[in-house]
Image (cartoon, one colour):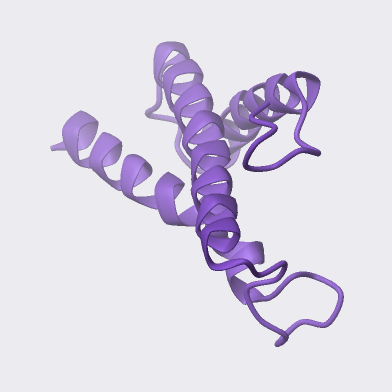
Length: 104
């Protein structure tokens, strides 16, 4: 996907993340947020999927710029806490502002 920053990320994985984002948004619509339209599900799913990947790439870029492999050792074998939450750092604000725009 962006070999200079994260060499193991693939185009296939990226597409899978986008499809997973749409499926996750659809599940949320039917379980929690019936007010979402099909267009909302698609836009939010693709947006969250894309922004999650962007957050992961930005965190990988930060780690590379500091020359470290893992962002911490709180969770052994998982690269640190920031590695577990990096995708959420970009996805949460997008979701918040989308909800504020649609439901305000």
